[in-house]
Image 1 (spheres, helix red, strand yellow):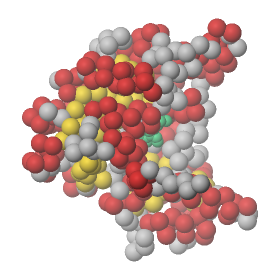
Image 2 (tube, rainbow, N blue to C red):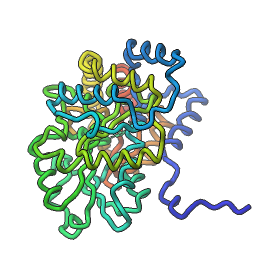
Image 3 (tube, rainbow, N blue to C red):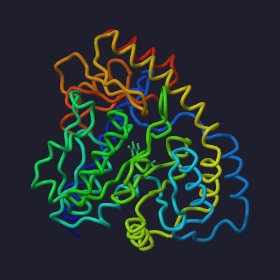
Length: 385
Ligand SMILES: Cc1ncc(COP(=O)(O)O)c(C=O)c1O
């Protein structure tokens, strides 16, 4: 039998993350002591109460039915969380839809709104799932560069008019991955004005909303005046509550848009395991005490890695939040070659910047997923280059 993938599979190349992991494991097998700063998978365990609840509920015989598009209990907890955290009022029934992790939501959402020929505005660099969703929908990406001069925020004024007129969806991510820029109301106001002018749906990915180091929490897009007229916010329990393996997230915002996604999702899956929804609801209802520890840990890690890299001559994108350090190294080397070299020579595992787009050339992304001593040790090793 001649087995051939569909032509569209050319757009879904195997991820370099697996190559990095395989290479790192080979080095480990040779005795290298690895410091893995590659994946943004939280190393802090979920709060004990969340784990206990999950295990108690999993033991119940009644927990195993389909939940379809989600439980009211979960949706009400999301609405309470938005009200408490951001003073945003959400109708739990019509303005929120759950997804099986935000990756699933991000990959499927463009299919629900965009056709071939439509343009989706995204950034360069950007989190990789946006491109996957864009390609799956057949729409055309337009990459807005994230530059230091523009504080790593996409410059909407620089989008050519003919592109803006064809745009159907705009994807933003603040604090971002890989570049941890922070949102402001003034910026969101510009986004909303742009969305209204060109009839563009906005999707703000707030996956790192609880990762901030000083001052106020990052703003929710839905806090901006008129946000619900033009868009939605997607958020996940993966990072803020260390529940990455449970796969639970949600999209909140414009009721018409949420209805379209609900309809799409009702054809795609039959919902998330009920104990996970209940554990997630508990987490959201106790978000403040649970995420306090996360902030203390990550702000210390951020300081150690950022200052350490700066001291050895690397240029680090300034940031007040997020889970990553976006660093320009002081050598004229291809970032993929350099990332493999760092694994081989120093046992330090990072992600080459170009994984996130062409603008990542000359950069590495380092995830703050190791204790401060390990981050310090990584800097000490990098200083030997
Ligand atoms: C910006 C951003 N959005 C979404 C995700 C997906 O997270 P999950 O699918 O676990 O919710 C990630 C994961 O790294 C991310 O960095």
